[in-house]
Length: 352
Image (tube, rainbow, N blue to C red):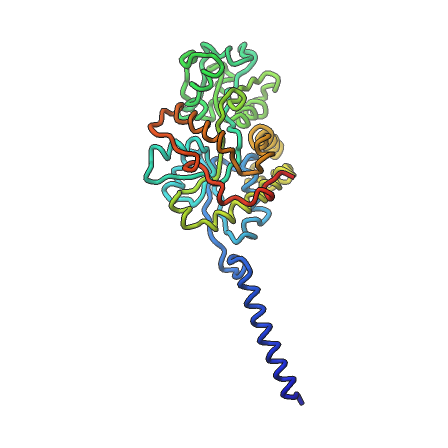
């Protein structure tokens, strides 16, 4: 027989338990209180799934996006310009693309502006590559050379600034139009004496695919010749961002986790790349990732400010260079180009 006192105490205990559970649920982040609350995010890369895309692929493979309540679909891209356009039109919620191309897009399409929310390539991978066999060992040796590149290639369009910085007239070279896959073969055959493109792509295409000795490759990285630009960043449409601020915060928190993991263990990151892209050559992509880490992802600025951030003063100089090189009719402010408002705390973004 249960006394009324005991029964009353039991009822009180149950009531307290119910209230405690309710309070705990209220204290949980919204995305953890229900399995059905996973927010879908459509995300486009800039290019194929390769070594430099490791921060995103690693974040997904480790379950970082899911931990933050996101169901992220990652699609390969076909170039930064296309990715930027797809984010602008709403085909994707977020994208990964060249911030300089984004600046140009915004000036030309002010009705649907984008903004960068997290910087991944702190230094752009833009470069000119040549071979020592052509007598090219320093930038001034490019005078009179033919350079192969697609018409819209970013380093090609930035050539006037590079040329000015190294003391060459902008018209001292001849540009030859060609599709991206034809650049390195054309250089090796001698059809052109130099090519422009991404350093970690061109260098490995020459040395790994075409078996050019590393000692014969000459690379002039734009970041080492007075071009103060940033590289690829996570971008969002401004109007979409305003309605999805918490989603972006969670996305960047998860990306920060994947980024740190890829930097700490590049081999494991490439294993995740291989799982996402079975045809991956792990040796080549590990080298590509390591080149990107050393030349584009990590530098003194990143060591000081942490991952995914920018230096406003440098960004201001970068905007000026982009406006001049692309002959844009307006100059955006730093605040119109990048916001760090959704980044994890600096303490969490510091390199280990």
